[in-house]
Amino acid sequence: MITRHRVLAAASLGLAVAVGGLVTATTAQAYDTGKTTISCSAVKIRKAPSKTATVVGIGYRHDKVVYDQWAYKKAEKTWYTRGTVTRKSDGKKIRGYMIYNCANPYQTNPAPKPSIPK
Image 1 (cartoon, rainbow, N blue to C red):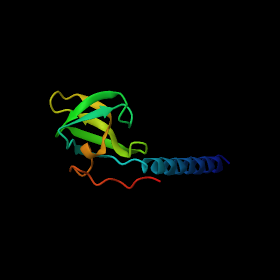
Image 2: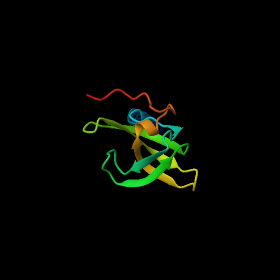
Image 3: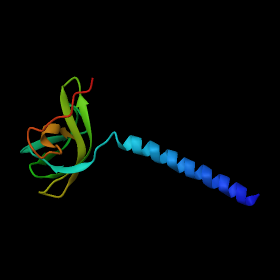
Image 4: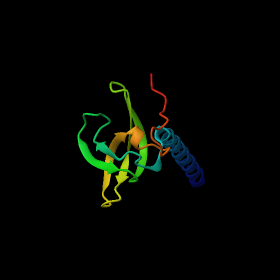
């Protein structure tokens, strides 16, 4: 009887872990992570993906960026990259949104942009 309960508990736990893994994988696919550098001479890093959002810092050419999401601001027709910039000049880390053309995974300017959402 004890063995049967253990098998049932182990099977239930295995199913819960498998389902939890699927949910996590699906959520993770909405984001893309990677590293790049700032390709513009300077870019404002903002609190939100908007040209009017609060500026939390400035990133400069060749500063490192670890990005994890892209956002499209439909009203502005502008793509943004969200990530953490590590400045070469002082080592400061700044987290926020930057214009996609200045912080893109292709390290070129202008960058090939993702397709515009409908």
